[in-house]
Image 1: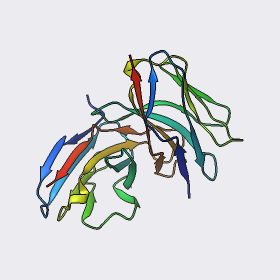
Image 2: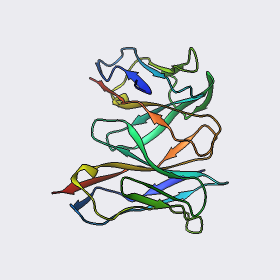
Image 3: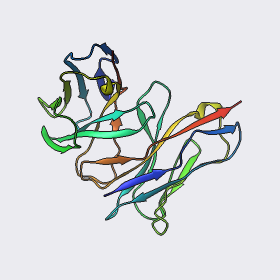
Image 4: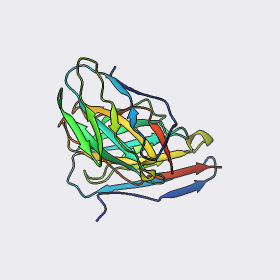
Length: 111
Length: 114
């Protein structure tokens, strides 16, 4: 079945460091890909999305490119801040009433 | 206005009790979900409803019974609560059948069974 695999955390970085969180997927058809973020004590919020191959989603300095050839959607940010500390989820959807999430990656940013 | 609201935010109860969690969305979405998040933050879909009809039931024990009185509401009733039911439960909604739509999540209900 369809699935999403993302790197295990926690990931700990210093402020202003470069961030990469890896995400790969397995799916039939043409899924849309998403990154969601969960701040402490809150629900998930959409961070960015890409709906077709080679699309780049971006928001708040984060970027991810839909790579069909490598079935990947890695999340990157050039300079992280303490306020980016959260749990990040990669997800896919094929419009079949099911959104599949990866296991989440906890990110800690040290001042 | 909160897009997806669920109540209560915290719920502490004893084993064997029956409890309900309510969810409402004001986005006009057709599809609503319940997800369970365990202590390791792993999100697992439990149910998906489209226009009040059950679409997905991911091998959830039948002690869990979702009820959708209308397409804006999806409540979760849990019978005979067990220690292993302790988790955070998230309600979400999205537009049905559209691939590129995002899901909107509620704030979560932290259920603790003692």
